[in-house]
Length: 78
Figure 1 (cartoon, rainbow, N blue to C red):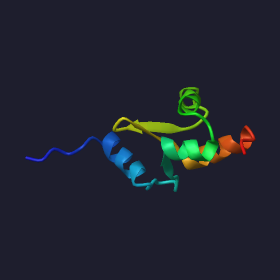
Figure 2 (spheres, rainbow, N blue to C red):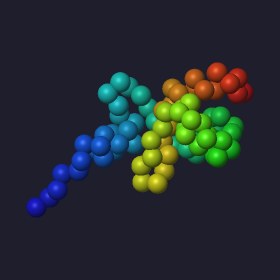
Figure 3 (cartoon, rainbow, N blue to C red):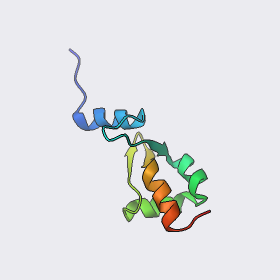
Figure 4 (tube, helix red, strand yellow):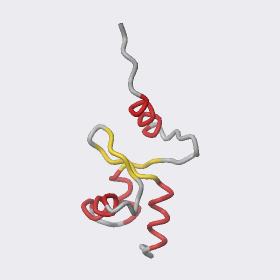
């Protein structure tokens, strides 16, 4: 008998495959480091403070690309 995954996990797998109902794409924390030129702990700090939307799946952080770009503009990161 196969067991169906909970909806929460199924939705996260859609996010990992960069498929979202509203067209959002997600990038890994390593890619966000390259975009923002910030240290990993600094980006995690902003995730905790809810300045950047993100979720954790399989022990890895995934961030909303549009939030990363908005954060970059707001804080004038070159």
